[in-house]
Amino acid sequence: MFHVNRRGFLQLGLASAALSAAGRPALTADKPSQYPPTRVITKGPRHHWFGYYDKLQFDPSSRFVLGMEVPFEHRSPEADDIIKIGLIDLEDNDRWTELDQSIAWNWQQGCMLQWIPGEKSKILWNDRDGDRFVCRILDVETGNGRTIPHPIYSVSPDGKTAVTPDFRRIADVRPGYGYTGLKDPFTDDLAPEETGIFRVDLETGESKLIISLADIAKIGEIPKAQPGIKHYFNHLLFSPNGERFIALHRWRYPNGSRLTRLITAKPDGSDIRVVIPNGYASHFIWRDPQHILSQSKNYLGNSNWGDFLFEDKDNGILEEIGHGVLDGGGHLSYLPGNEWILNDTYPKGAERMQIPHLYHVESGKRIDIGKFHLPKEYTGEWRVDTHPRFSPNSQYVCIDSPYQNQGRQLHLIDISEVIHSS
Image 1: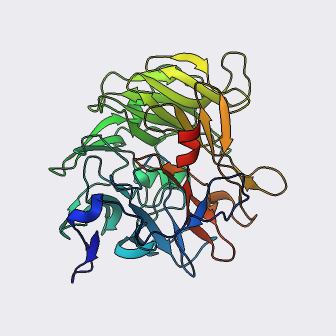
Image 2 (image 1 turned 30 degrees about the horizontal axis):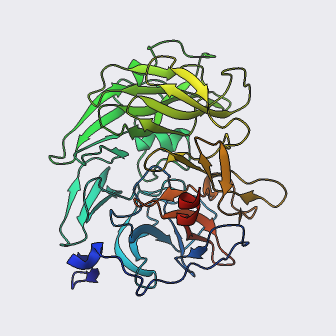
Image 3 (image 1 turned 135 degrees about the vertical axis):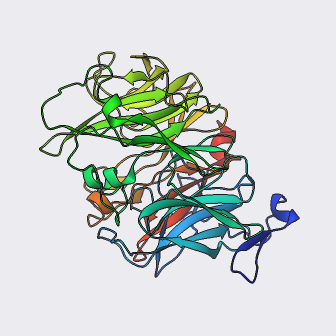
């Protein structure tokens, strides 16, 4: 198990992989009985959450859960607002242990906090150090840490490389996804040559611009192009074998609206493919190294947003998945084995209920795993999407959601019976 040492870090003992029921709080049915057992694993008065759905929140043993803590809600972060980074032990009464902090974060994705793939005890997150954003790496077993002089977004499956957009530019064009504290030096340039997507070597700390905004603006056709559109990248994700990555190429119109293309490329920025060229791309996930599940519209006779399977090639549309059943606006993940898709919804109806759900690919059956009320004050930049994340053993799903009068907190859902009984 983890033990706090004198430096305030955690140490990982040999018993970490031996999960016993001792010290585990019961998963209680906080929600109606038709849903799997759920418990809230953080508590007020401070607020806790994790952020995006495509990051590793659980350690490889599925026992330890990462989270972030703030003392306020319902406003934009300011440059010196601190979030605390912590670890929750599911086998020790959901004990919270503070690890470190950051001043480079946002409400939707936090500070990119995540376990490093392939590592049992190393985590990383973004921070700000003087006049630059950086990445902190911490071994929670030894307490040893180091700093990479460049922020990261998505980490390769071998844990050695990262790709990242320019968070300064995102903060300028899409509040809630970039970081405050540093201004975009290219704010007046609609498609600058000096910024775009960077590859970061997590071993040496070296970074290199691999796709510029000037380059991507010249590739293929920009749907509904007009003067004054401002280009940027967001939402990057390595393929399961690390040989390619996804990025969303977005452009904002003078009136604030935006359109999006989904592209893929090799880690060196070469072999760029425009998989979704029509301007409508949103949440996505790799199914395997050759296929991508993404939300889009105006495909296969569906003018509404839906979930479509694409081959990793130019205009790679193949088929729609779960038409009318799998929500077309949620945050998608495949559980290990690809038999199940994990998803959620934005607030539904007058009650503003968010509904995480599982979709069985072979049978086409959807199973809702909870309903979570989102009060109206959680809106816009500081809304709380549930962003469901699964544990490596597929037993748990963790979500972000307000809880009673304690603000946003982390909720744990036990999906083991759902998975094994279907």
